[in-house]
Length: 206
Image 1: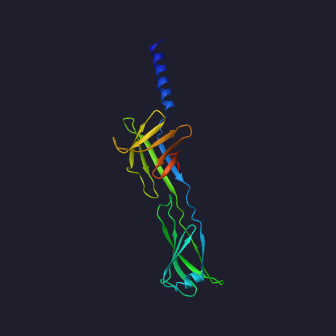
Image 2 (image 1 turned 90 degrees about the vertical axis):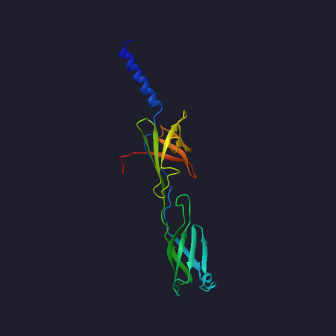
Image 3 (image 1 turned 90 degrees about the horizontal axis):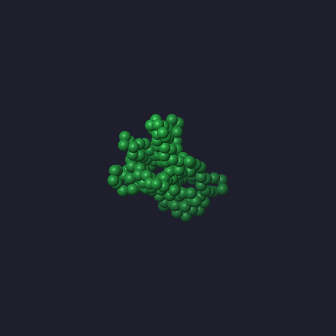
């Protein structure tokens, strides 16, 4: 066999090996289904306010949050000021307070509409190779500015398509991710989120 033929065969073998274990270079995005910020109708019986004599803070536990009426702030026969406290969850993190006004209707109920904030949770991950061929990942959550213990991680592969995310050259492992090149997905535990899925994103897209 000629040397050129051997060289060509070797190049094919190297290319085949490279294609058999593709690296997860590129931009990745993981998202949770967000809150829709749907308006919530609130109705409070007049007896609930009158029994407190309009002197105390009144808490009304709702299915999706809490109604806080600090009645001494402003009160008259037709208007009461208060706050709707939006619940915390994995998406939004902290509770959120929204001002609300309750108006007295003809049936004697105090009614109003709370408008919770629509929330979302997304994690962006940019994976690239350095001059030594090592893979590094930069992770950021823009809504809550979460990056994990560090912002940049070194990816250490194994033979099963998994990558350990290490903070620094010899730092502890932050998490382990499973790369699926056929589906173009990465699955990993990210803080309280278990088996969180990342999908490949076109870096040139909007």
